[in-house]
Every structure is written in C-alpha cells, then in structure tokens.
Figure 1 (cartoon, one colour):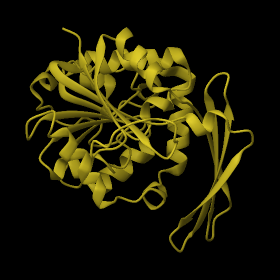
Figure 2: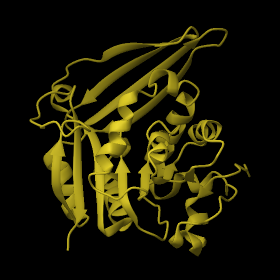
Figure 3: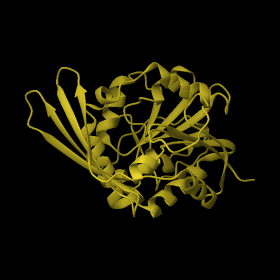
Figure 4: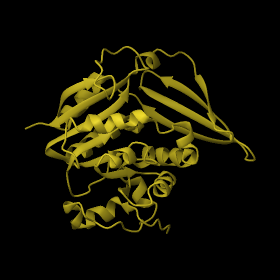
Length: 289
C-alpha cells in the first residue's frame, strides 16, 4: 500500500464527517483503489496519462498572470473566501492563484504524480487535496463553486462517464452555488481529417511531441505524447478524451438538475459565438430550484 502524506482519498473524505464543516485534517492515502473508483477503465487511463506528464506539466503549461482572471470571475459569483471544489486540480495551476485570492480550495485529482507536484508547490497546505475519481466521489458536503477548468469534463471518454461526472458536480454544489465548466470549442477538431502534430519545448531539457487524432462519430480525440528529455530514453503516454458541443453540455447539465445561466469565450466574460477551436467556452450553471 502506497502512503501519500497530506492527501485524502475519496473514501477518507466520506468517512470524515468533519469535512462538512470544511475543517478536516489531511489524511494518509489509502492506496491505488481510491484513484480508480466508479470511472473504471477511463479513469485509470486518465490517471496514468497524467502521471506520465506530471514531471513536465508546468513547463508545457506554465502559470501565467491571466490565471488571476479565474479568481476575478469567481468573485462575480461568490463571496470573497468562498469554498471552491476544483476538479482536476493537477499541480495547482489554477488552485494556487485562487488561494492567493482568498478562496478555500479543495482539489480532486486521480494522479498521484500531479498531487506530488502540487504538494511541493504548496508547502503551507493551502489547498486541500483529495485523490480519487471525479465521477464516483462523494465528499459529504457542498461548495459555493464547483469548478471544472481546462477541459476536465472532456477527460471522461464516454457519454455515461460524462453524465456520472455531471451528477457528481451537482451533488457537491450548494443550493445557492454555481458550477463553472471550461471546455474548448470543438468546431475545427470535428472536421479534422488527419492527425495533427504539435511540438512543445520543455525549457532547455528537451521537447514534447503531441499527436491528436479525431473520431467524429464518437466525438473522441486520441492524444499521443512523447517526451524527449536530455539523458532519458523517450517516454510515451496516450489518453482518450471526448469533446462536447455547448448544447450537449447544456443537456448534460439539465439531466443532472443544473441550468445554464451564462456562457463566455473566456474568463473576462468575452461574448461566445462558437465556431473557433481557439476560443474557450466558459459555462456557468446553477442548481434548479
């Protein structure tokens, strides 16, 4: 059994009733079973992929000043110091700026590698990490904001997994709270005819090559990443995502008892008109009365 200090598993959180007051102490990890949960095969693929890229994630996707825009956006929905549940907290790229702005953040993540990076960047323990599968989680409490940034919902590789995830989001949202989901506009990807390859520099250490192939009928994307780091043998990681049209996201929300209140093309509330995969889609939902 692997022990990860300072990280709760989903089972730990369910068992600890003090989570309802937001004051639970971090517990020891209960092992790999908690990381797979109800998501099964899809969740295991996502965790393995994230583990493989954890070492270079912050270099491929560095923190930028505009991440503070996420916090400013959330302040239009919730009070300062509100309780936020972030799905796919990763290395804290979004969560740490939120903590800087005074939010109390719980972050769910299935990858031990990502959580290890988060712990190294957050020695003060401002983020409460929970290791587990999003779709199967039940933390026994509700939050002012449930945040699913950076295409987290698309990491569920099948429709039933996305439905389960939306239900999990809804049951963790306070009756007067909000759900904020960031996805990408799939318009350009949906008509992609061949694999597209992108190279990302990793500082002075090497590079990562990413190949993206699309299966329009199932709305799936296969991502193949290969790391070339100085002194290391090449290392590959593969995952499958399922992209969502905005109207489809609205339907998933309705199934889970959530209604759309706003949609933007970014965290500064830019108007969303669709049709361009370079634009993000920031959707705000609230529980139905």
